[in-house]
Length: 439
Image (cartoon, rainbow, N blue to C red):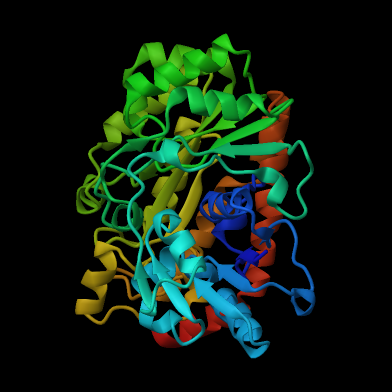
């Protein structure tokens, strides 16, 4: 029986990904682990967000490691460690799919894109080439739903459960690499399969939807929510990513309120129309404002994300955005620096004009500035991201949440406030570096 250890590394910096306390295992590598387990392989899966073992004690035939940009240096270090022990190491995931030659310095083979269709041939040694091109899984019902029991360090009935109901995103955001990784064709999981998966959990306290946009197909979203309601699946709270046009469908909004306390993650990105147009976002500041009011009228919560650093941003953007968040009373805004991730249109543009000053992937997490903005210095952009958090996540905001009985957001706001103190402390050297190149 072949043995396989699969690893999802954790970012080494305290960064934007740590802002939410909601953490679930990465679904992609968990599906691969589930496939191997069902095929009879001896499987161990370590997601470092939950458990980091003593890797010196790992004795498996194969090591599979996934990565994003912010975690890839950690992935490379682990790959080097296992190869030094004589183990066979394969790397996959978002980052290495666009940087295979870089990854090959640390592993035996690199898998590009979606790995399900090449997994078993890979394990059987059928590929002679070092770079293996995966292919899109067109029928998502042909692959298993993730088996949480395989994740080391997670309890049998986890407090937070995630479900991926589709792959592919039809939008064309300039800063996003998911369209290059998974394509723009929308590929759904059947509704009955989703319901059967959710019914296996005795009680779901928090349900996360692990996909770019749960409401891409609104008729299907209505179908899923209706089936959840009919089957008594009512998580205490639920977190899907949705587009702002969800506010236009009252039937869908009513269903959200009947199933759970929904908290929407929405890519608002900016309140400047020129910035929105440059990102290929099909929305306006007026639509954003009116939609947020409607969602609030329905009692729905919003985590709105904003990106700073566009060529149409100047130093006034930080205060203006914070003021907008206060005025619209967004429950949980997030602020990040525009980041030229591998596989994005914005990276191609910045590389063409030599605007990227570091390829230290540890800093590719949305919390660190890695390029030269047009209308401010890198240091000013970095300070601006920090100031937006400090402005919004204040003591008065914490008190207001508690006064309204919004205890979850009160504690979450307190958590973010203290987290950013740690981020600032951890990044003192990086701030000095940004200051030096800015001057």
